[in-house]
Each structure stands twice: as structure tokens, then as C-alpha cells.
Image (cartoon, rainbow, N blue to C red; front, side):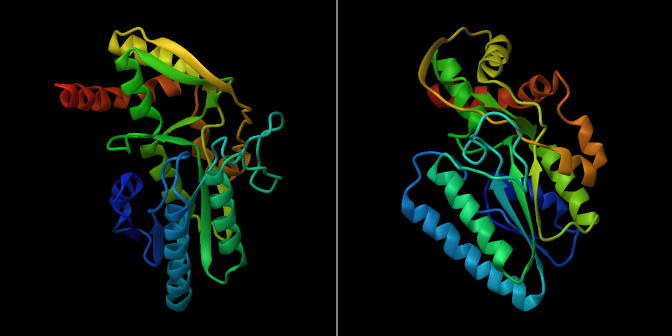
Length: 253
């Protein structure tokens, strides 16, 4: 496997570098859902187009990471399915859907993975966990009213992708999520308990949250059904919270 990129996902998928020959993982591009300059979207698209041409020429399989967040699944009610209608709510979601369409229309062998809110070490400061930890420690956290988050450990993402590639899953889209989203307030509750801090909560607006279907994932990787138990999100947050609490403490002196 060749991993292209230098960020959070790229670092974690480097553990599979000796596996899956002929597979190229596009682990680069936009990693946060808001405040993204158009130039960043354009740069990622151009890089992906070039990679598609290369993989087609060399007969390689291309793995692309999209999103299963509310940026993509934004209509309350029935769980969002890979083959169902989607109405992306942000430029980030629309950008990912457009790149999915480019891959679907190409001749390259590919696998599109719509990721839930991935949590792990060494993430961008504006991603979910580092952002929440920083805000809780500051004493004030800003939340979207009605927001739910499906949190998944990056280690489980790597395992799931490894299994999908081993099974030869190809030319399709798969939601990689737990299927068990929780209100964002519960995430804050747990972080406060871990950190021993109480933060004021400010609500900025109301958002629609659509659950994510994991039926396809479970049919392809049955062992993924163990992900998403009732206390799963707590275990994942506890596993990584002090990485960001520590870095925040160090940064503030």
C-alpha cells in the first residue's frame, strides 16, 4: 500500500504500508468541515484528478476518504445509506460528493469511504476532540443545538479498511461509522469528568442530524458490529483526551 499525504490519517495508515500491494490511499486534502478557502478545495480536486490518471495508467486501486458527517447526511429521519439520496449541508459536503462522482465516473478501480468523526492522536486542532478539549479547558464551549456525533477510533478505521481491502471490496461507497451517534452534550459531559473542569455552554444555532446506516459495513465486515456499544464513545474519548489536554496545558504554560 502506498499512502499519499502527511497528516493524521496518513500517519495512521502507514501501519499498513507493507500490506495490499497495488493500493494507493489518498490521505490528503481538506480535513475540517468549515471555514475552508475555495483554493483548498481546488487544490485537493486537482491532486485527486492527477492521482486517478496515475492509478488508471498503472492499474492501481485508489482509496478515497469522504465524509459521513452532517456535512453529507443532513436530513433527519431514515439513516443515511450509501445508495440513498444525500443533500449535503455545507461546501465541504458538496465538495466530497463531487469528488465521489468523479471517481464513480472514472475507469480506475476505487473504494470510497465515508468516515464518521474519527478520533485519534495528532489531529488538526480544529477537529472534533482537540477543539472540544481546548474549549472545555478554556471554561466555555460553543455547541450546535441538536447536534449529534458518531465518534470512531482511528485504530478501528484502519482495521475496517484493512478488512475491506482484504475482501476485495471495489467500486463502491461504504460508510465507516459506529451507527451510534450521541448528543454532543454527552461528549462534553465526559470530557468535563475526565478533565475535572466545568465549562459554560453557549449554543450558536440549531442543526439537523441524520443517523448513519452501517448495514452495508456490517455485511462486508461483520466484526465491525462490535464497534459502537453504549460506552464506546466514552472509551474512545478517554483513550485520547490527555493527548490534547496535555498539549493545551503545555501551550498555555
